[in-house]
Image (cartoon, protein in one colour):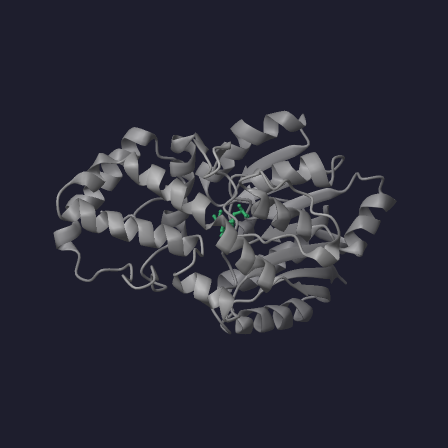
Amino acid sequence: MDVLTNLSEAAEYSMPRLQAIITAWVMSTPLERAQKVARADGHVEEGEYTKQSVYSLLYSLYRSMGTVRSEHGEPYEFTFNTWGYVWPEAWGPAPTSERDPQRYGRNAYSGLFHFDAVQRRARERAGRVHVVELGCGTGAGADHVCTSVLPKCTYEAIDMQLGGVTTCRKKFAPHHRGRLVATHADATRAPIDDEVADIVAVCETHVTDQGDVMTEEDRKFFRSARRILKPGGLFVWGNSIPEEAWRSSFEFMESIGLEIVETDDVTDEAVRARDLDDPRIQAYIDEAISRFPAFRVPVYGARRRVEAELAMRNLCRAPGTRLYDDLVTRRDPYQVVLARRV
Ligand SMILES: C[S@@+](CC[C@H](N)C(=O)[O-])C[C@H]1O[C@@H](n2cnc3c(N)ncnc32)[C@H](O)[C@@H]1O
């Protein structure tokens, strides 16, 4: 059993199944040819994991863990699968509370809508804009936007992970009386009509991160976004990806009629968020690991425990990991981008 590749985006795993999966992963340790998670910094090479498997595991884990306590004792359910950033001073007062354990994720979603052009469009339509989000995860950001950012909008949140979409349907959508709909689909083949959205939102969606190589999926992803947007509609996108990936994405977007209007660099604020968030992330990982007795199996359990911790810390861009360093060195700058469908 290889948890990095064997799980399915079309499945949700209950706690008993997760226990069986982690036990099988621990027991398969001696069969593994080479260790996939680098001991030094938690890095896993492209090709050694699939996003289908990794996010499937994470969303099932988040649901099974339920409510936990932050390092300050605040109860919360881990739902923002977002690095996010400290709210930039230049954007005015922070839209989130210092006590909120997931404030950096919330900031990232509020930040997508901070552009004047977005605010103007919402005002012109008395707030009744239609948003489509590609890669919504659990829908935590969709819930935040529907509640606090655009309280009169309608919102369709799409993700390829059934586990994430199920959390959105059960935990968040019922609060919004039909305004928030969650759709289980690959964004490159989204079952959505042409030209329906005022705004397409993308928050740290795991695409367009392969350096200067635009994959077939990346191209389809942008084409899908453009197709769904009304003419003149706005595309808002935040992420930390390689500098060359930004460049090739912008080139491709312009070539299909998504005109780049504005970009804001929030890399410094993203690094600060990762530093400040570290105790919460570590508390969550410790709690998660403690729930799986397989990690207490002598030798193999201990080895897998270290790998699990390192891989999760790297995914969270925690200090000391490869992805954190890529943020600090600006190999992966964090930008918030506004484009318009021409
Ligand atoms: C880092 S998570 C971010 C999730 C969410 N936006 C958030 O901030 O919490 C990346 C998400 O992108 C989704 N994703 C990646 N490629 C996708 C695709 N082609 N179609 C739909 N979702 C995709 C993954 O399933 C995952 O939920």
